[in-house]
Image 1 (cartoon, helix red, strand yellow):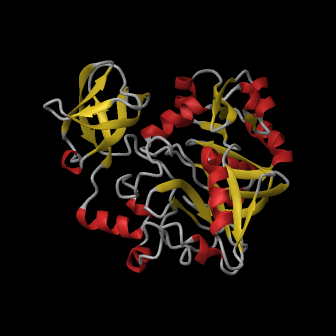
Image 2 (tube, rainbow, N blue to C red):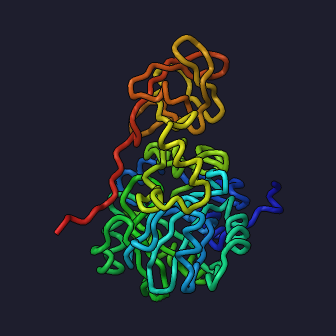
Length: 371
């Protein structure tokens, strides 16, 4: 895709004014870095990083049949989801493969507010347009931008603008007036850090972006650090770590399968998914510590201790926090136990690797104390 055909977010001029290096991602012209990936990664881990994620898709699914229709294609139970909550789920095809991963919640009393990945949003919206029935209605919110603020100081920054945000715990969400405009806000993100995602009217996005950057604790962060942060957090990237051939069991995402939905077996791909839960999948996503040599990037082969190729790396790179190379990839279950010694083939050379637990760096989401 050429620069001429890349779409832009409403914050494109703001990124360029800040000196961002821009790249194509998900069909959009996006900032990969401002002052440098390593510095931005560390700033987010220590302070508050500001991310433009307006390239992602936002929509509402409304109507009396909205949840029943939505649940035909995802394995989570949204009937029991309380108002003011959201949760992660998976849009599944009839074979149980992951068309996309998404966030869906109930920030108000008007159905579901859903956020999907940029590269898949047109396909997702077309899928729902074709398959939703009854009075379930899809409304694409293409007049809104999406901004994420992440890091240990993110909450303090946001609470200064709206004190009620202090009452939010991880995965709480609401529709409220913030920065003087109608926003959807959730306490969530894609870095493993505490923080918020804020859906704002596109016309107000640059004002809100610049207002948040006036706080000395906040710096703009590009896609480069976003990727290294989510890798450390063990979070999959659709199109790389999961795709339409990957089941939730293979992808180590079974937490997205609600018990009630497994019992009902009434969602796309249930037969395959339940069989894999019972009998085991043919492959599974694991975390790897790469003990020597260069980073094992996407596409690098994974071998057993005898050198037999058994899988591939799907994401990998240096971990700024740990000071060593890490990766995620797929191997047969027989090689997935923690501590299993493996090898990764990088530039034609075998390097020692070990299966380790994910997340690689402890997630620091804020969970409210239980009453």
